[in-house]
Image 1 (cartoon, rainbow, N blue to C red):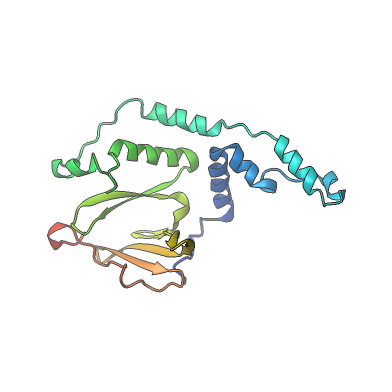
Image 2: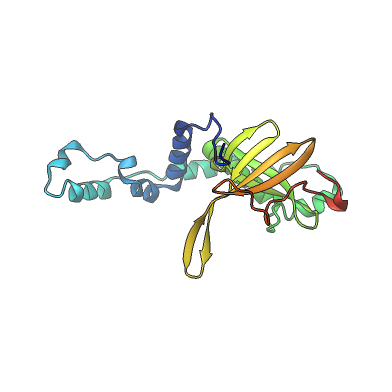
Length: 213
């Protein structure tokens, strides 16, 4: 099976609902930019000389989509985080995580709001704990769409992205496989062909002192 194989529960219907939520939260420009996906062409336009293109463009220009969902989500997030959360953790860990939750100098409070936003928009989000080369822990958020396969002690995360080479950008397929093997946490990185990337794949991830996680 290919590394990009999706879990049976990740159906086109579910993915379509997520996409619709992302687009509608983005607002009027995004929705109208999707054209016929959300605004079908009226059957009467098809008889025009240009196939209804001009009439449809004018029709879409006049159409209005209220930008209220993003405001609603922001209001819900504000209500949820109106009262400060009490977070307890070991002192040695709190000194790092509270001020730099993701290794990119993002405070835990801001990181927490990002999680809440994802839950408000699509109801699903992934958060993993990882360690850097020095053995320091940090948190990483994965969107619902990027978690493509899972089981007990097993996850596949789609990390496909655009990478720049000079003035050009190229789509690079990349997949992170997280797995518990014999009680030990393992991480492996694969390319779009399903081959393990040796120089990026990390197995037997270790904490400080070389102890396995």
